[in-house]
Image (tube, rainbow, N blue to C red):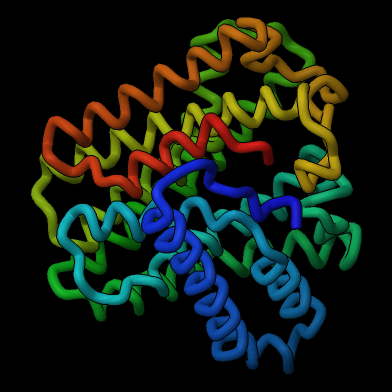
Length: 308
């Protein structure tokens, strides 16, 4: 599967931990679908099917894995996999809506037809909207089981990152910026919302769920924000250099939509250097507060070295 990218040449223990967490998140999402979509099966079976299709179709589970690594680094000891799954639900919802005909109008996601190509745009739209309260309910329920976690803050932070000040706001700016020349600062504003907000909150929530200090939470948020922007830069580079088969989504979409990108503004090599510098800054922020674990460092390097 294209999205099952390797972590690279890292310590075997680190790779094993990341792979284990990926499988646990997949299992948690499957259990959640079995448990929480039964009422939808009765009243809106197509919507329930579209949600299952979107949640269980594979993926790197990068944001959930990042959360779990941050949670452990911040001192968390309980099983927080369901909260990682909640973060992945928000991400999956954003992909469903991002691919819609009124948005990026894409045909391929995670190596399969996009949700609206399978179920129709109306059903895919409703499925995406339905996934938002599903994520909030899952997050609240999961956080309530974690010692030291502030469940109210967990839900507030997650929904804020998904809202107008985060993903949705970034998506709107992205749509408004199509076919327009953008300055680098404008491009970074878009992507710190559209891509970076959920990556940043995944790391931040690791600290919140573990009951960490505000200094630790702030460092994790900084690390996550830097990784989020680096992740988008890497996506822009791969859109130019990768293939649809390798990426699991349509290559060359940015050029087709006439979007400003990091390679178009900076050139490929300078864009890659910018991503590397962001990753280094994020890791340094964690190192200063003693939270830079081998897993978090490996995740950071994966962001800029991945091939999908």
